[in-house]
Image: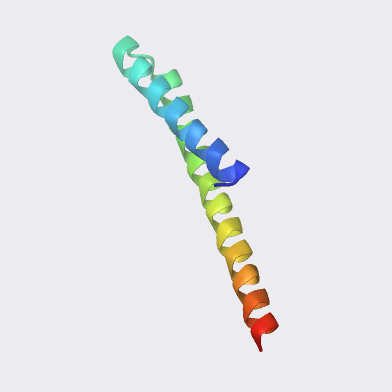
Length: 68
């Protein structure tokens, strides 16, 4: 897990917490902000996932090149 995946997951969790608090309080502005935070977390986590895939592909290609 890289820093983007970790930060993305944290944003998603915080967004869900804020969303639940907004539902209880009935604050629509806070709820919109919470949903935006969750979306930002999803984007950051996806970037982190892409980085991991690229890193793994490079590592795999390097191993294949070394054995050839």
